[in-house]
Image (cartoon, rainbow, N blue to C red; front, side, top):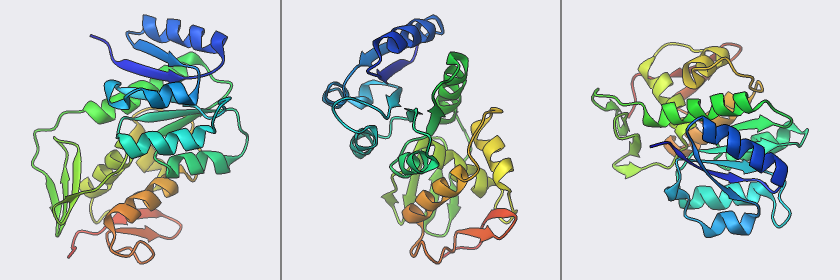
Length: 227
């Protein structure tokens, strides 16, 4: 049985073309041409959401925020907007990845498969524990002092990559390769945005991080010793 995909796209021709292409790749695609249509559905009924940021009835960033408030289902944004700011805002609101228009359908497929692999990757290893922080790779759950922290699948995979290399400085490019598992275009600061979101979730004071430390000019290091 193929993965279920919610495609939020008001361009009927593009939606039809993507539905056919992704259908041939094994996805079961449901199309929502409006934000209201998408928000009326249960995102937990789908394995991933592809969300166009330019919708006729509501800004796609608002839709992204509303969806993330209800679910941790992966969200891939489609954007024709030229500003990197919109992409950064989308990531900060909880999107897992983005793809600028125009794009090749095969790149969309590759990104979707990368997102789903990260989410579904099994692990028989024990949870990683660093003081009050627990990273359960098998259950795909992050806890701080026993409380579940809400992060996207991309951010969880990024944290796992950092934690599995605790004490080692990792460059942004290296982290992108570890987390994406694909040679795909990404704007330079996307890792910084996701790290900022992770810090908001797991640091007592995100402005003075003690778990994910910036090494200026080099990248990030995950602290081995934590309270």
